[in-house]
Image (cartoon, rainbow, N blue to C red):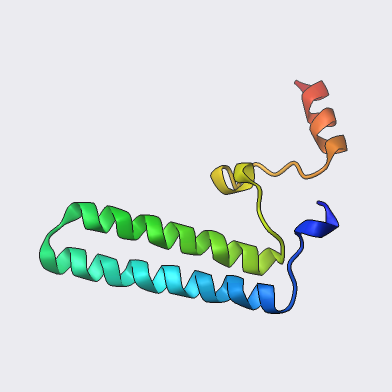
Length: 90
């Protein structure tokens, strides 16, 4: 993890604010989708909640995430040494 990707202070607060806004907007979208019986709107709202959860993870880890960490959060090989060791074990 490079030092330039870490976030502190006000940037970390912004990540938390973004997480809250996306999650609240998604929850409101689900309520509107249920009331209006629009399944496509519920799908968009679930995407918004997922995006909010990504920002919540940025806040919790105090660093920006890579696309692979967003797409596959359970697969975490952070250093080059771990990657090369894992490739040799295959």
